[in-house]
Length: 393
Image 1 (cartoon, rainbow, N blue to C red):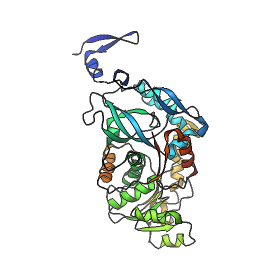
Image 2 (image 1 turned 90 degrees about the horizontal axis):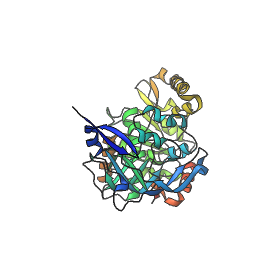
Image 3 (image 1 turned 90 degrees about the vertical axis):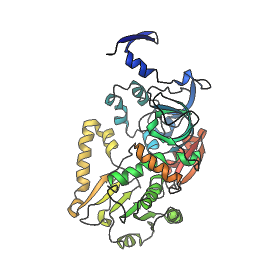
């Protein structure tokens, strides 16, 4: 049976079980390590007014390792995702600010969710320190990974996250290339594998990817081809060579007057993955009838409904919206489904292995220096990009 012991922490006498002390002894704090600063710079969000709420702060505390499975990483490159831009404008505020009440036992997480908040969902960098339970990584390792929202993110000099959220960077990827994969890749993987149920069997399935030139769409095309699907990609005339290079079997110029008739010639799709950001006016007519065909959107109204109607009202509105959106589709055996980012360690392993074996090509639209992060956000908000937008430290 464990016995009690006491320690003085920040001037307070705190009682622990001895077994708990042994667990805490495996933690490593960066301010106890040589050659690590006590503070760092970070782009922090101080409100929800978009770019004007982003400020570069040079006196942010370097995050401590507070769990034995955590890793401290010095960031070399990070990407900009549409979620970052949307969060800077208040998207998801209701749910994210109530996150602390969902996990009251994690004091470290509670403090990270309040403003000011550092955005950024994926990264590539170098390990600086590891918790006592981390066995597969050590200081000096080059890694790539993700940070689930709404935790403090990667638009900073350092970050701390679970070791399960990162993998060793393949040698054939640059830091910029590695940072372009995790968040967009896991979003594409979850939309196709889980939401569209292609994990059950994708070989020979006919899939239409709309808005295919962006970060998620460009990875989705390559995942589908690796899984044996037939891929039709839709984009503007300027990106047709790019989409063909990614491996699309057919590319449709959506600006062409014949685009709709060309899509009907395929005889119906098993899955449509919509990466355009549209939130309504989904066209189910391109789906196969009575074959469990699925229209998967990456822009569900979930968080927006929470913002506008509160937590309880938002849940009710989400249910009603999903029913309404399916009312016309389900009479032909089709369904509309909402897809989300899923923080899967095993899926990240799959993505990294594909990149290592040169079966997943990175697509980078542009690279910005760390000091110009607001310009990178502005470019993301403007849309019509080809691949990912990267920030280098």
